[in-house]
Image (cartoon, rainbow, N blue to C red; front, side, top):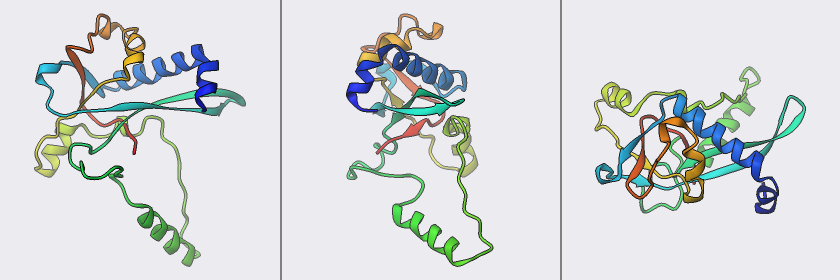
Length: 169
């Protein structure tokens, strides 16, 4: 969506943001934590798009956090899955084999339904990753609509990620 479209649709955008935050919270993706205990605070932003839902044009909001900012500081962008060249290689191989079927699908809040940082650490024997984030300041009031975040104070608190949310570049 353009900035003008977002500004022209304040109520549906606000409702979309609340739905996204509530869904991530319900999946156990983050908890409140004192800012004094935060060592790795990354930034977040919204990706807001138009989407057809049951043949009706609706607004979809996704909260994204800059993934791997703590580990890849020298890079402006980083994708933890694969590079564009890696994606092209997969497409190239699939195109050369008639019996290969290439498909994609969308799983609602797929990242949020994955392993927690603690589970991943135990499984791989790697150090437990700690990541905290802030919602954009103008959306703190949206976050406070969730009962567990009533009275949330962004000057003294952060959101501690339990498992990943969407990442942006």
